[in-house]
Image (cartoon, rainbow, N blue to C red; front, side, top):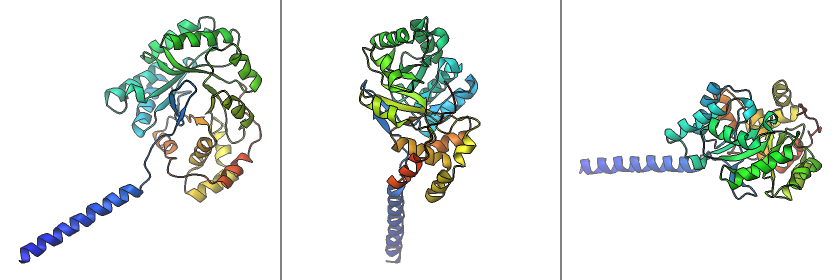
Length: 302
């Protein structure tokens, strides 16, 4: 009899323990990414890793770690000189079962020095990345022959080498229209400098009419400006309110404001921290506070 009672008590303890664990699991925020469906029909993660200034070896390690953390958007460019390293990081992650190729969204860009041979530039990027296709290819910046470069991107789409196309560092509706007016395939993404001091909502609203989204590089202002942005009184106040870092507040603002955003870092702790922004939301009042920080001030002139 005593043995039977003892076993019932043990069973009850285990049931309560596992029930508590299950309840805790249900209440814990699930780490996940957020996606936008582009006008090309493909889904693009709205938070990714930027790789500007990383060499091949560093890019490989950072890309691999970012994919392990949960990122699925990786941004590079021929100009960065690290497409080979980015490709190695992607292939390692695929080989280790972290993600499939279809789950990973890779962006690269054609640099101005290759604008006279854009078809070859596309092939060279694919070779460097060791990929059969890229998910998004951009014109890196306005320049001589860029309209012909865009037509080469369209040929890349038809050939199955590129899934979506767009432009980078085109800042006005007039700049966008110059490409749109010669396009047979509408730009899907406009990648520009955007941060709390340069929000450029007018361009965002304008390109949205054509199904294009704006993607933010330098979301923290870039080297030499990050400390200034992180020290902004409003950002510090919100970071304290939500028990988050200034970086996480800024990235959350980008996401809720409708941007795709690609913070760059070679620091694994920062890479993980930057992805930990899906367990809270800024209120409408908080969003308006950050909107009020806009100075229409860019830090670069590209």
